[in-house]
Length: 113
Length: 114
Image 1 (cartoon, rainbow over the protein chains, first blue to last red):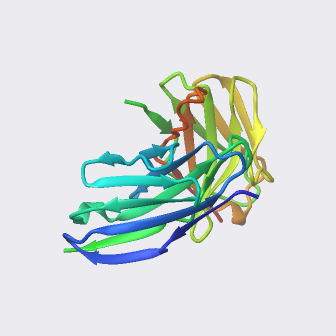
Image 2: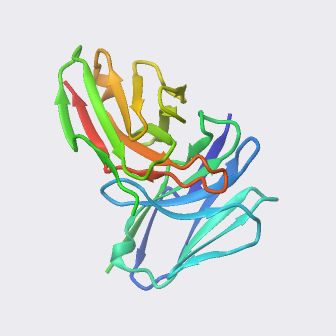
């Protein structure tokens, strides 16, 4: 059974801090790893990673995948209160539910002013 | 911009009622999905469809059925709602192109079954 585990489950930091969110995965016939941000509504897409060692970057957010060690990290630098959200990691493979997207339970990030 | 819409943001139903949740996407996506999201359990896939009139069971299909009569519309049906189906229901869509696995989500329907 495919599994995606995120850590920490929750994190409280001050505005301006840098945070690192972790995602480890066990996905049959792994194809890609996706990061989503979920505020009080539907998840919004952040990154899709398919290759090891290649950093994807968007503003203050960046992510990298390690296919050997089966994990990914999401970094947020100079955090702002608007970064407060649940961050979801999902693995895509040939196994798992139907189209093979298995979600972790999320990291609840709270940025305090 | 990809747009996925769901028919209701909030819904309250009674045990035993038949419930229809509708999802529409306007990007000509082949794949459509229904998830439920519960605290401590994360997002779990109920059903998905990769083409009109095609459907596949996800991880937790019991108590649900789906219908895809048109490419842009994917319906989730609770034949006889039960209290353990109280949840946030999220619809998503994606291209079938294997070069992109991105799923785009609708705003969600919070269903309460009394």
